[in-house]
Image (tube, rainbow, N blue to C red):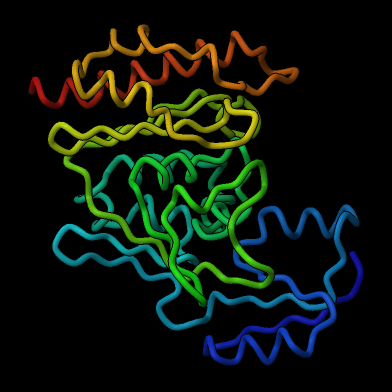
Length: 270
């Protein structure tokens, strides 16, 4: 790893001056992807800007049924937070199954979403929840944020500051994890509020996380696990690698969808 300058601003206004004085700066939160990339020599930033000391950047709060999660909140913090646990426990369970304990204690929701790994868990949740993504410059709807594998609508040196979403009446997340990394070979997050249903898939799409609107429409008519078997997935471009073929991942999406639907339907029955 080559030498670099480390900055830890305590006010967001000071970030712009730090960026202006750096040749090749990068933001640092948990560093789960950035630091290994530096160690491998894939990137060599001149300056790292650790923004985790900014006021409120890791806070989790709610007003009525609107939840706000700071970008620097760690996976472990999201998993154990009582606000998330009370209003959207599916998101807390998702966070609690990311990676291992070390990753959960260092990795952040903002870093994960900004990196937009095609097998990451949070992008499916952000899409299904219809979250608003706030940055130091603007706010964006989740549908406008994810553009493809490792690609987002963030401009150069634009910093995610928080996520905000309205609490769904019910939600569930089911994933089939890679046995070594814990990344999703397929994960399905489903939200239901009244007759409205939102479904998002991660780990399986060749372009990253995506809304499964075809299944949403079917579930709004018949919210049952069997409905997942009726959705036509032939037009979707599924990811293929040594861990699974297209047919394998298509089947995983159906299975994970059935599990998430069954979890929500089972709570209704209770």
